[in-house]
Length: 190
Image 1 (tube, rainbow, N blue to C red):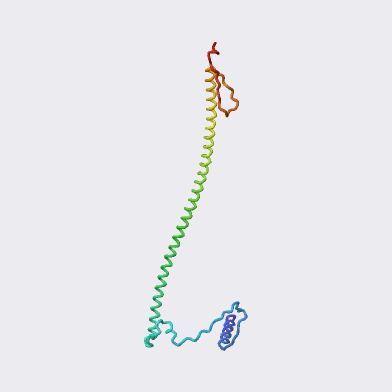
Image 2: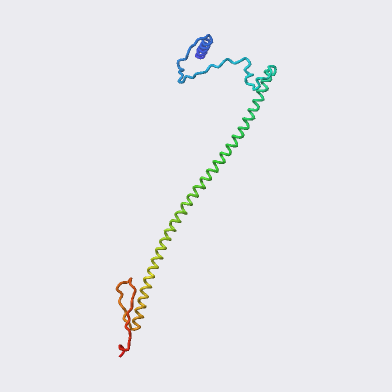
């Protein structure tokens, strides 16, 4: 029963539309108004406009000839489309290969940066150790010089004492040791 009522409503609506009724459905509200430009009415031989050779004789522009030329153009377009599809596929494959290569190179770059950072850290540590070693060596040299000076002064005193002279006292460690000896003359020996 319900089905029959729906069918009757659809038939009545279709009849009203065919009869010229301009009934507008209230649920449709256009949000955007689209302006459609009126095109001039097409000529009776609209297929002729599609064909490139418009200056050919009217006899050559029969429907069969036009269809043959359009079929030929369609074949050429299909070939171009297939060629472009193949080109697109090769470009997509190259793109994928490039993406793989880029990801590999990014990994290599990250690894190289890490190695360079580690090498830089090692070089900084070696430089600090070398600087400390230089300080130690220079400090050791100055200590050795001081000990050699003290040794030389000791040997000089010992030599002066053994030769019978008077060993002077050293008041300032930076001044050289000057030894004054008494001359032994005949007057002192008598």
